[in-house]
Amino acid sequence: MDDRVSVSISDGVADVRLVRADKMNALDAAMFDALVGASDRLAREKGVRAVVLSGEGRAFCAGLDMGRFAAMKDQGGNGIAGGERRDLAARTHGLANFPQQAVWGWRQLPMPVIAAIQGVAFGGGFQLALGADMRFLAPDARMSIMEIKWGLVPDMAGTPILASLVRD
Image (cartoon, rainbow, N blue to C red; front, side):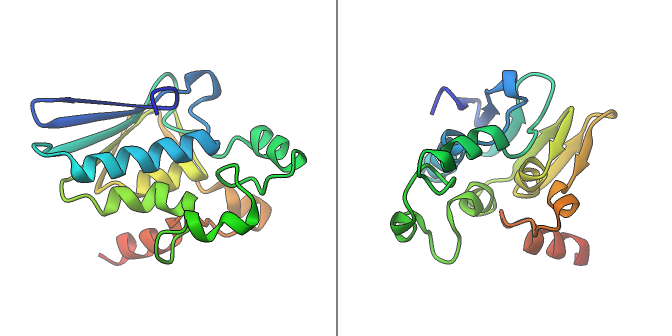
């Protein structure tokens, strides 16, 4: 987990940091694994009263690492968590697939989750920020649901979360 997401706990606050600064913390299979692992770990961690989710370097999260997923597809994977299509059921948590769980897991934690956003939060990065209970943005931060540019649906749980946030 340490090569994509670091978790440190001090005085009841968990500092969860995406640590792929050279790629603006872009999402790849290892990042999805690490995000799900981090939220699962914190769900079991005693004494954590709050979580701060942030990105190392100049971006919170630039979204999907398109080059990495294209390479996985060329190697015979399905582009999601590096597995084969027949393994999807094993990676499914209820109705959510693995990338959805990377976002939804933060909403399931019993303590407040705060997303500290600097730089960009594009596509999946925007959806990851939506998984937090609160979002604080640097004055120059930029957010966008990039999927719309290509006529795609934001499919990492962003659509239902955003709908509930706008309604409340």
